[in-house]
Length: 237
Image 1 (tube, helix red, strand yellow):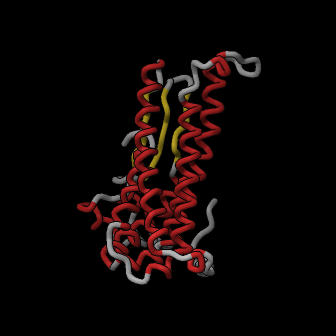
Image 2 (cartoon, rainbow, N blue to C red):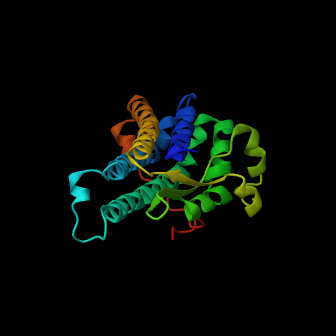
Image 3 (cartoon, rainbow, N blue to C red):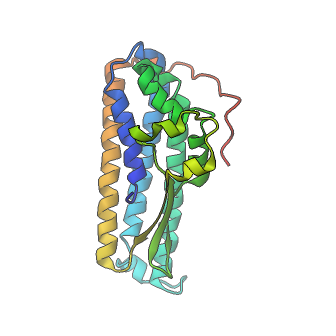
């Protein structure tokens, strides 16, 4: 998986869902609008992170008094920006989990795929929240180190069938731990370019969700009361 490739996976899952004909969509508008806002936050935080990642050779980074080297300054501010990416992606997955009940409007097959990954008690969802790390620059190795849990492909869904009691070894099959090269301007530029393409893919999902909301939702449905917080869902830590 590439930088922010996990986001592209989530975007595709949302887009595939929206291509199905909904039943009584206005019942789900409030949750889908929350999802739209979470998507937008991921896109904006990711763009800030990519800007910091590509800033090593700018004057503002090369000039430093508070750090031992420009590289340490670059790593510090990029890593701080990527922490915001972590927070926003986890909020997005949490919003997806919260909207999971609403997605029944798209039919049982689509809902089942969401339930395996994003049901409140789903092992995948809990492990994603625990594990997710969008990226951290390690100055010594000149690598961006990432740890993510990818979505199961269609031919892998069976391993999540008993989604509440998936064993850790099974989830390890979906774990991606990466060391991405940032040794030199060309490597950094390539990584930023890949990240930008993946973020644009997520922006496409956001725009399609916006079009869905405009088509099916009224102001009253957007202002409707949210369902009560599910008491069994574990709080984020």
